[in-house]
Length: 83
View 1 (cartoon, rainbow, N blue to C red):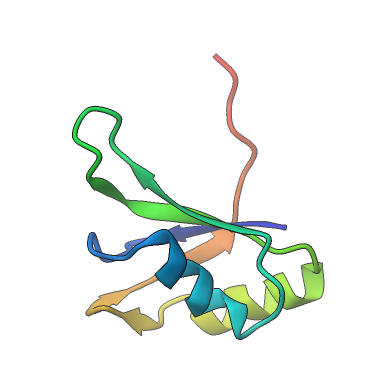
View 2: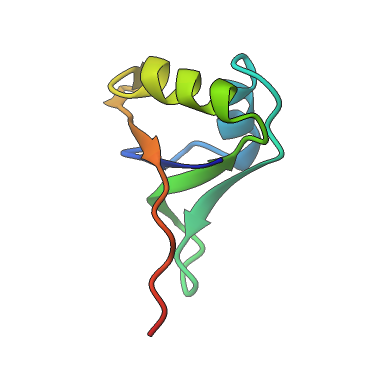
């Protein structure tokens, strides 16, 4: 399952995002989305977890949790719109 993680601290790295969710199960990928021109964090990222039950537990436990002074917004990622 692909998980959207919003309101992430601008200082959080991909590895920190992975570590945050790995306590709930296997994380196949974790990526902070960055601005193409400045390479600064855009304040959100995505975590991919192969086990849907682990992912649902992570969403329930992490949504609203304060990480780095910011309450995370965590939910199942919606498919990307094609233009």
